[in-house]
Image 1 (cartoon, rainbow, N blue to C red):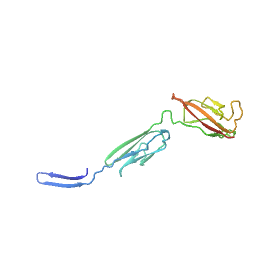
Image 2: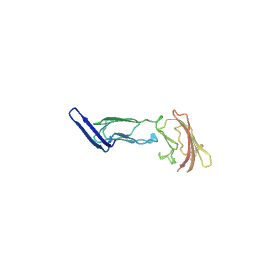
Image 3: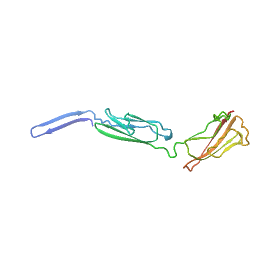
Image 4: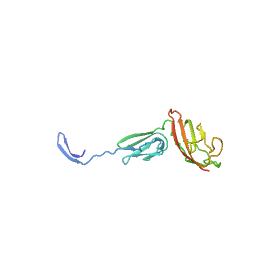
Length: 195
């Protein structure tokens, strides 16, 4: 700590007294900076940064020596920071969520005109291992237009009797369950059919 200190040295021949002032004593230490993660699936890519005293050497687990590391995959990362005072190791872990990163997405429009682009409609469960899914499409008057009972079913814009449904806004409901999950998810919304 800061303050005035006196050192006295005595030997058989003489006596010495030294007084000195310490203004402040700081010890620089290294640290690893990482972002706060609230949603693991949307965390990547992220950057880890080492803050270290001048003259320090940095070595990441992949062999790189920069003060930053771009993390583009789930896993464990470590870094060793060393200088004349010693070495310190840091580790960072970003585990992949159980069941992977599932991102449900449902389009809000489709164009079943036979051009091969946006011709079919269903909830899209990207990166999801789906155990079961069913969805239904209703007209604005509550008439059932389509019923899909498997994860691969898609609405092509035709009604249950095989006629083309007109351009309009329809309501969909969906229920699905992911592999390894006992709870069922549900969603509903609007879909615009454009011809």
